[in-house]
Amino acid sequence: MLWVKAFHIIFVVCWFAGLFYLPRLFVNHAMTDNQDTKKQLALMEYKLYRFISPLAWLALGFGIWLSYLNWDFYKTEAWFHIKALLVLLLVAYHMACGYFVRAFQNDLNTKSHIFFRWFNEFPVLILFAVIILVVVRPI
Image (cartoon, rainbow, N blue to C red):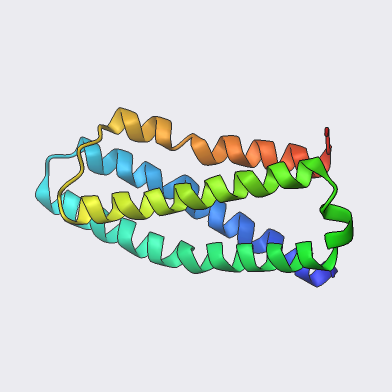
């Protein structure tokens, strides 16, 4: 079980690293008018999204496996159910990032760099909440 937990944590850290960086690329992309820069950023966004998507699946897979191994304990824990809901929100955020990657690729983005600066904060809030729920277990 410790190996499953270790791999879950490794893939979560890698996934979050990508989720922290990708919206920063969106900020730069939304700010520039230079077509060469837009092309370069669109390529970087696409490659990063393609890189972090399998990491997300691996983080989720190991997390589900870990949950299965301890289901008798987790099924009655309120903090675990809240964590699961936050993970679902994070998956939705990941999918929204995919939407923005495609929008930038096709030069269809309508959001400002300010929007993406705020958008970039969401995974930070999720990370804080999940760590507090898992470590402190306040409820």
